Image (tube, rainbow, N blue to C red):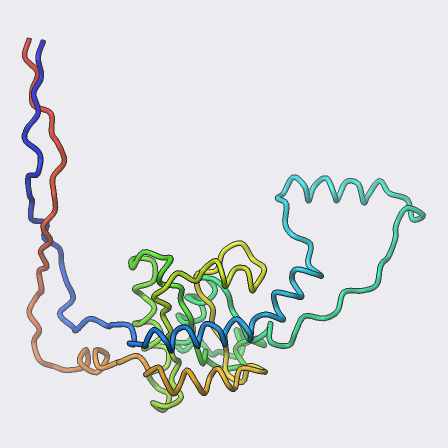
Amino acid sequence: MASSTQPTGRKRLIHHLDTPFSSVSWPEILFDDQDAILEMLCNLLNPIGQHRRHHTRPSKGKRSSKRRTASMQDATPEDETHGPPAPQKPELSAYVHVGFNSITRRLEETSEGHRETGSQGTDDAKGPYSMVFVARGNQSSAFNCHFPRMVGAATRALPYAERTRLVGFSKPCSERLSSVLGVARVSSVAVMRDAPGAEALLAFVRKTVSPVDTSWLEGSKASAYRPTQIGSTETTVGVKKAKTTA
């Protein structure tokens, strides 16, 4: 019995439906400015990380939590020791969101205008984000390509100078942000308006980072016909085994 394979390196053209509107790009930021912004951001977030490291019990999984609960139920009042209460979290903690899911959810709510009285909370009263930071150097573009569109849509109604600034760090910085905040992974950080202690960082970011261009939103309102856009991508086809012969 013998088998053969087709020659490698075959190319294939893949077609996909593209948007008729212009693509939204990330704001351009000089590398020196990115380094300065990262340094100022870490200094701002450091008190949050210190409180978490010193006064928050690290998670060891569900099994450990169940064992600790069982031991507490079996313990007698004499065995319990009460230490000094942990200090309150820094005020800044209420103005900072960390993580892909929480930031994306907040941007969705802001862009859709969900400001009903029944769904308002303490976070909603603080208004939209003033700054959103994304560790692009540690991620695939597919993971964060939605941020320019969402940030632009969420703050399009604000005055130009007050719109949310989107900062994408080109160099890998996820590990440093994780170390500063005392959490396992940090892909993105968002700071709300009027965050205490963030005045200097916000002033520098507004000086060096332009708001996201939202011209694509205005173009979507035009009545002019836009033809369908078909994109094409050339890719390499893997090795395919030919039929075997006896």
